[in-house]
Image 1 (cartoon, one colour):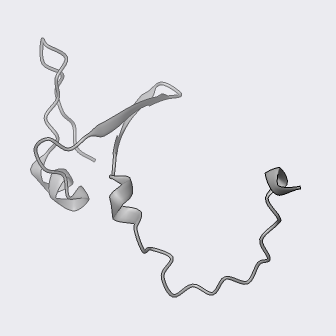
Image 2: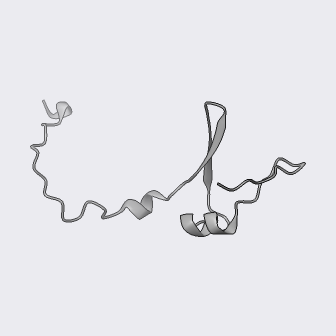
Length: 70
């Protein structure tokens, strides 16, 4: 666990090893979530990175007919 200090402008510096481990770079977006008295910073990944992540998976379900076609 790493401790950081909040600046007078309410800024914090994410430690280098944490940034490297998450692949964060200047300009990246981070979502700030407040949960049960704590703050979580979650990297926001572009949807573009999801392209093809299901490639090679077998489609084993039948698609329901579109309701607007009925």
